Image (cartoon, rainbow, N blue to C red; front, side, top):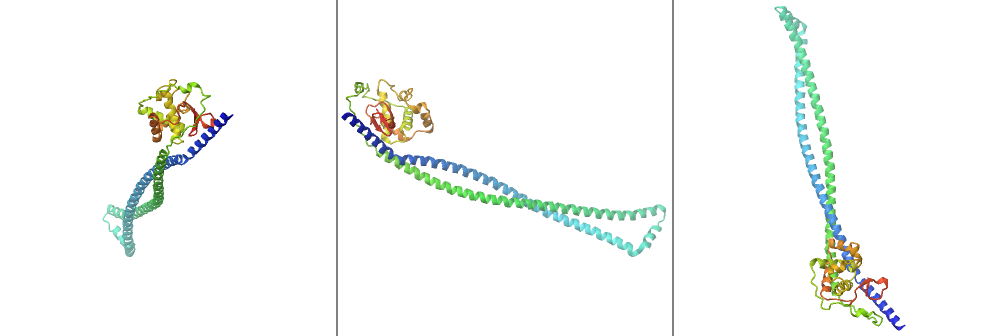
Length: 360
């Protein structure tokens, strides 16, 4: 009965230690999430700002083109006005000449016209003079009609050009308004980006300080002593090699750190070291593979490997803190003794609780 009470108290103590350690990690984890979130927001704003600047450049080129067209249209309208003035002048001159001839004929009466016709020396001369009078009248009428048509055509062209110019000016105003709105949006986005960058730098600094503080919290957690009277005698002879000297490659360290991150990345240093110690203990034990790769990829052992989480971490890049823990474990740091396995502390399995897991 006394033995059961001791075990029960040991388990309660372990759970209390685990929760206290996990509570100390809330701030660093939040800081990391904040950095990731700010980096994503900053990247999104940079892309948005780049797109807005490109749109502004295209809009500026369009406004420049419209301005050029308006300038050319204005010059063309001035030319047409001059042509119209010339046409009106020619029409008026032709009309004045025609009035003078008609006035002459009326002032001198029909007798002078008859005298001119009857003074012909021959029938051929008479017919020529009649034809001449008819040609003069026909010329005046045709010339006047032609000049009037020319004036009307030029006036119509002037009206069309004026309408086109008005449309271009209207379009230019719309584009200028759009340019002003876009410039204001760019300014606002730029200010927002600057603010996010400042927040990002602050968050990075806080995350760095939190990580440094976490490293400073490395205080060995003494596992509760267990009654070995009921333990299997084989546990005293784990067949481990006390003279463990393993030289790991860079890829093995990265794989090791990825597993640590998946299994205990949300805990503190002690929680990560406990997981790392299990891997090292298995490498020393004759019942497990003697390499990092062999232990981690052994079938049915670590669920993050089977579920592909380790691969995702490797592709994304492992955390420096997890790499540091992996190196510490290989260098001999161990806070779980000879434990070879672990599971979630919520399983209530008997063992040493560190970082939300129970090790046994």
